[in-house]
Image (cartoon, rainbow, N blue to C red):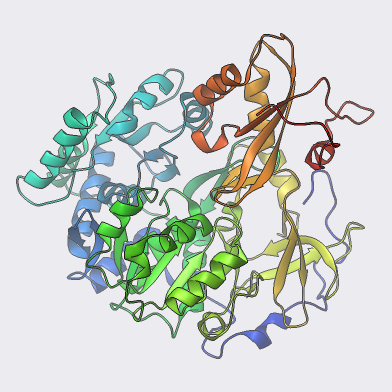
Length: 583
């Protein structure tokens, strides 16, 4: 719900739009899923390992890890956590790109009954420090390239256990000569591992060896237990942790699998995973849903390195891929991708940001498949809506976000508080088993987001047609999406306002053909000596790269309401002729 707003009138009563989307469902998609099918994500994982033991679960840098080995190492990591004093409900932060180590520690943490706190490895010290303190994490697993950030962010946190992993870990059996060679090159030739001091840290292989020497003690995990604290900026820009329970995530995995029924086949699929697994979209769809059908999962460590990505796919006749609009665009500019045989491709999903029609049309012309768009948010684990797969196999991109997935209700709320009818615009509200438990340690924010009847207000404005298809016509008023990541102006403004030469600052998003949007800031100087480069240097210290402003415009004042609130909508309007930005 919007802050302070009451629940819509008739929140529990049936509404004219309820269930109209079922008539548009493919015949093999069930209307409901049963989250009680699995007791927990640990139960789900163990069943997958048992069903697909001899199949390859993950591939990284050409090295394969079978389901059986994944199960053994995940249980060993769970045993290590238990030996280190980690109890059910404790928070374990994972700060890694897409590697075999991430998969092992993810499932090991869940097996131990601990809560996974996913961390963007590109976070600055300030951003990591907030997340560690807010979550109360006592354990962190960090990719060694980012260990210095942990070193600097650790003071003031509750971190007592640090596990460090490198790119070469787990790439082979026995002596792992390949992995050791890779790590040596990265450290001493390419110098990609900055010096750090974490004297009490344990290397992941040693942690796994220690865990393997002691028996794993199974723990009781229930549907209501928290599986993930997944951070999202929220509409205010304050980083909040969405509490996703085992039931929430199990439900969303089953919803995704129900949607793909009849198109994806157990033990036959090869999925490419270039999106970071610490992102909720890739986590639920790639790490978990494809695990549930025994797919071969090709992990891409750095999707920005298109040449390396194509080398990873050289011998992979993949059947599915999930990516952002920007990555699909970059792939289609690559000769090796353009000349591939796409006859095996069944599913190409686009998420995280709006898909541009030009990109979708170009992709269909090149591959014969239409990009599938959907809609979701962290608070919903994340999937809410998706376009039927059979529709996209035969029809052109239509720009809708599709239909509500099984066991999900969606309504639009008008500004007057009543539910909107078919064809009427309103704030998209969702209710279903995938909706989060609430925000970690933020009961007031939880009450503002979820009403007493379980409706989560997304802040996005949409409209539903007579077939149940939904089209977004606006999104959260001030949020920007840069390369698929949510960027909130309040955070940028708070950081830049701390510069001693800044009097006032406002941030907006401006359209960009590559990243979707880029950040622009309007600054009122406190000291006339302030220049663009000085301001950006300050920003780079305190903000992740995609949040750093691409444009800076200095002004004498900012438009404000009578009570002093900056009017960002006026900043988004074109300047008068003759007034040019300074960068």
